[in-house]
Each structure stands twice: as structure tokens, then as C-alpha cells.
Amino acid sequence: MATKTVPVNIGIDEKQREKIADGLSRLLADSYTLYLKT
Image 1 (tube, rainbow, N blue to C red):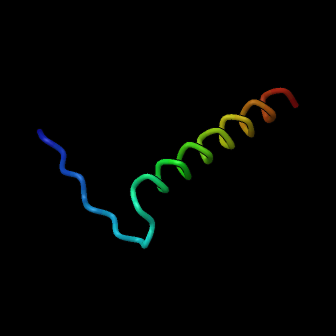
Image 2: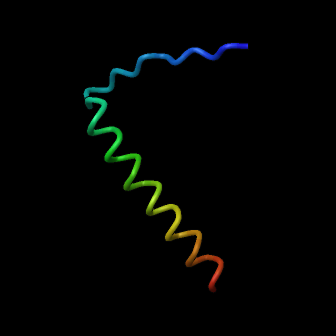
Image 3: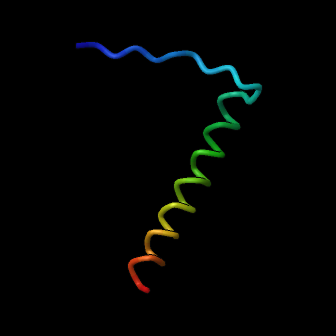
């Protein structure tokens, strides 16, 4: 079964969304690591 991607138009271009997603994934990883250590 093939999956289709829905175009996203929220006023932020794709490159900026990639940067935001990268930053959020790093934040999530850091938060999870901190959670595991406490």
C-alpha cells in the first residue's frame, strides 16, 4: 500500500520546517535523556 503525503502550507517553507523539526528532535532527545537520568 502506497502512502501519500499531503502538502503542508502553514506559511513556513520546507527548509525552515526542516530546521525546526531538527531542533525539536534534538530537544526531545535531550529531554528524554534528562528524564532517564533523574
